[in-house]
Length: 290
Length: 332
Image (cartoon, rainbow over all chains, first blue to last red):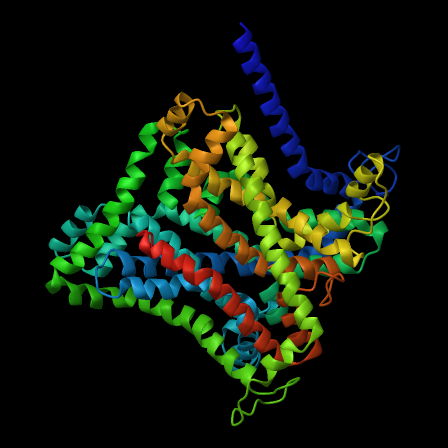
């Protein structure tokens, strides 16, 4: 009797601590959400619902119209950048895992080191490269692409390519770890059957990679969507800027009364990655923990 | 790492989930090296076949990573300001000596170091404690885990907005708490003595969930017998974790701290968003913010390039031992 009582008390304590942690991790988010729904953020304590005035969505509409173009830009940026880096990462990992040759580990190490590069060490050349050596608007002008791309800021291509290049290392790591688990017999059998490297990739490896593509796409989408630094340096604060830059702009131009709009803006900017996270939480955890 | 996490997350600490990953990790490396030794004939064919797959991504990545670092290093050896053309005929280390005589740089370097150490250590400790709690066969484990990791899915820009409001002098939740317990109000972000601590705290909120996930995977890889053996020996819970379990989490600790340090070095986005510009709150200037300010606001491009190279060397000092360690364990 007494031992089970003690154990129950322990369990109660355990859930108490876990609940306190829930409060800690959710408090800023909850406070932000409640604040975003108030017309005057100061009418009640920040974490409490609004006073007699009630809830309002006007701050959300204000924030949405300020961030609208940024949201569109972010989508145009994140979708191709995510798909391309995942695909190139998968290809690289295949070439570095399933086909055996000497020096694989060395080349792979060069890929992996790219994950940890502080972007400050490459920022000046990258911005210079796009501004001076590949002025995209000039390059695109004679192409038929321009009328198609211009309303969506053709310069976003610079940002897409940059994100793909810096996404390749992590994608390669994710896929390589996955491919190493593949049964070598299956791969060897396909090789003995005379499958070329391309057929092997196309027919055997790619179809089996679907679960890993899910992990990689989720991880990369979050990375690209959430980036501020490259967006700021390559696109600047202008029309082509993604939503993170837009949020920083409304963030800095408001006084403390504007906190409701800022919070609404933060939620709008965070919504896509939050949705991805809630739906694919497990894959996200796999992605970050690798 | 990945396979361990996958099995760990799916099997709830059962013993059957623990053996295959270890076996597979060792087996994987052994066959890989054996294959290249045993089949010298198929090797060049495999090498040629592999080229179209890894070489194009390598070119793109290599240009942007290694090419850019090289170019950046060259920039740091000349003296260019604003948008002038660099003159590569005259190379020297002037920008580096300048940095060490610049109080702003020394201060930013100190802050970087404090941020790196305090943030990483606190995240590891919080993450480990939370992981141990979550690992105690609780109900709704998925829900708890999801909530603790949620801040990590948000961008620095978004979390900066939340914490600006949390730290607000008049109505922020943090000051509401401190006044309730009788400590009074603080200007968390505009007081240079408190600002760095406030930033570290917010970043711990954002990333300790990451450390939790890594530790959880590590804990799940430890066979149940180890816990039982410690219990039979009469160790209490704290002793058991400290003596038996924590030492086995060395791998998790190393990979989590490397990634956390990289996050800390990238905290630019957070500080930029807090300030809404190139000058972060007083007392929180780090090398990452200083570099971007020198390059894109002050226009001292060579100086910025030199700071970038020093940041790169700092990262290298963290990563090179890590990669060597991973290589020795056959994880690379």
